Length: 297
Image 1 (cartoon, rainbow, N blue to C red):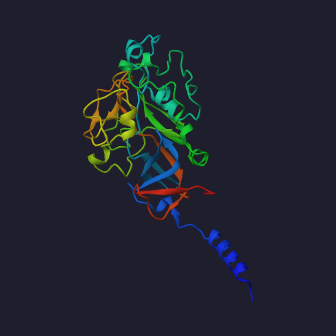
Image 2: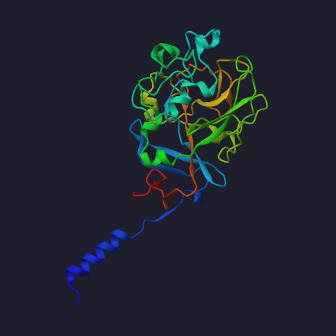
């Protein structure tokens, strides 16, 4: 007959080995929330929405606007006067694209992507609002397991007809902004930049609210900029008739044509893609989010 101590020891080992209750992320429906508690921005975990699924991946976008930043800073040496004074709307050369895909530390994520490029310093953004050259790259905020799990994604981006020749280019990224097409708005110059995500099945799905932390961190203030009101957020699509305007979603959920690249008062909602095999908890937490279960958690 085993001793009481041995029995308790075996029971303890069995309890420790009991598998967690998990499910594949592929089981979640569109609009479900997920998070990885150690991946934070402005000190709080980033909450993501299930936005779309394909045969081998799930596409996520932040539930809310997590920060306010310019699309691209003005380029003082650029011979194109609009880009010189108002920034560049070519997404592949933009500051926001570079920042989103960098894991570099504070103040070192930026490097020039073309001869006229300039960083989003205080002097290079509209009215000195929300410069971010001194921040760490966005991916520096991620847990290593999360960062390593992000899939490379080839995205299509329209080009303006003024300086960039029109048409489109395909680029590969880890993190990206959505396009007109993906949020269910009209294709720019008839160019489909990907396909519409299932999440964006009506205008209300396009409305986005900033986090309280994004509002508090913003140097730009407005009575309508608060955590209870929808706000503007950037898309990667250029307004193709100009060299310095980029598309964004209005607070109403409609498309905006008045957003100049160096405006630091527009919101950012990053998107990324994970394998369908990633596991999450089988029940949401107090935030209503399913917890991503990285190997070893």
